[in-house]
Image 1 (cartoon, helix red, strand yellow):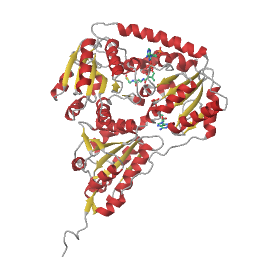
Image 2 (tube, helix red, strand yellow):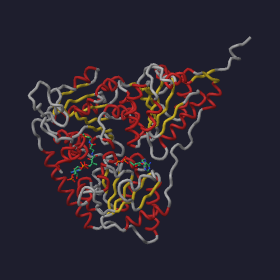
Image 3 (tube, protein in one colour):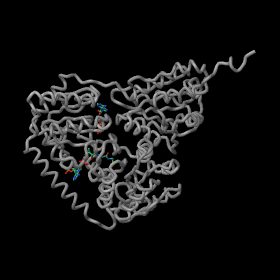
Image 4 (tube, helix red, strand yellow):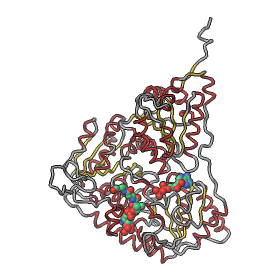
Length: 581
Ligand code: FYN
Ligand code: ADP
């Protein structure tokens, strides 16, 4: 006779996955239930995990990705098979492109049927499709391998250059049962998932020697520097060397934008004029004009500007990707910056203090900065009717100044570009935006995760077009009662609302939306606060109240439909503009 006490206690794939995530401190899942993972979402919640359900997987994926950026732990996104997986894949690829650690876990259909292409429910060879689009991809077929699968996914996501990882879990796996004690023993708590990578001392010295030889040195801080959470040392390096710095958009606030060494307001002066540039956690991709061309003082768009580069990056393959890197310093930013500081301090104590940049260089930058800041001040002081980007952003600038710990999400074209240069950031990792791809649609996913991770207020400044990609998640924001204030800059269209159909036909121009749309009603539909703001005073009152009350709020900020330019500040990337060049 078998008694209850003799029956070995069993566990199953569902619980092993939940236990493996929890064991590694991964306590939040961003996802969307459906076959075959609905029960998994229920069980995860029952087991004490935070399960945030979205209305579209892409938004869940974006939430997971930015949670990864903010926490240095892989953000977890959970989707159903084929279509849900594909919806999540956009975010996984974007995460990989941006070096954000995340794991996309998708349920999938039965291998036997998929591989013979016999037409299963949501049939798709998901692993093969994900592989070229992310940093690593794994499939687990047996319950006893779940621990290894999760451990490999974690290591791949956060070690070295962070990125997106795909974990394929066929439906059958979840129901597989095994002895609970053996299951527990099969789980792995990952030790040191993102090991420090210490730079070689000679590489550090080479970098410092080159920087020291500069007449017009410059530091560029990228989102890798923000991700690294080496804030105090980065600030110390900048201040100790006295070198002016430019923050890339998601590195804004790493040092306060009001820091006297910030050269952000003299960007187009410092890039071509600098002779040695120290890049910390940024790539010389399109956002930096590939390190050459007119932006850097080259004669044509392909010419080298003559700068020498020191590049700190965790990826040894990053150097020389666009132009010659004279001094690559390979390692994690925390270790590299600390090594540089130590070397500088040691030299200082033995009587060779760091030579501060010349007064000529600093003075010339200050002059440009002051001019641009004064010009910006004049524009911001105007109060046109209807509002334009500047008068509306003047309000947002004040709000962030008085609430420096609020998270700022930002997407759009003009809404992005103007916000980046007008709204100063004061703390690290508070500004999250469209990143390396200039992707639209990150808005509400990022806002949800920012609220979940930080627990504090989130303000999302959204172009009306950009908002449309993830707008349905206002329901998610209301459902979880998140302190998110969405400000939609509504100028009736993509870029502007003034295009006309040249044929005179009944269809509006491709860039035009319904005029006078009331996005605020969307938030009201789900119990949040909706505000229609037509003046800076109304906008200010509404955002201040949203931050105070922490209630989900959407402000429809009416912007002059003639304001803004095609593609914001990157008009030159449009093929017609390029043809005219
Ligand atoms: C910056 N500037 C300022 C200030 N800060 N002036 C006054 N005060 C302050 N505080 C000036 C700065 O010197 C520049 O003027 C200008 O404002 C813009 O600065 P920014 O934003 O730093 O640089 P820029 O040239 O716009 O572009 C750099 C970039 C960045 C390409 C790295 O713009 C970027 O991240 N772009 C992403 C675009 C994108 O993804 N779009 C989404 C797709 S839209 P000058 O020095 O006079 O030049 C699809 O259509
Ligand atoms: P931005 O868009 O701000 O210019 P990028 O995303 O292009 O920044 O570049 C970020 C860089 O930072 C990548 O090359 C990545 O390898 C690097 N990186 C990310 N995390 C770290 C880290 N902890 N240590 C060193 N380099 C890092």
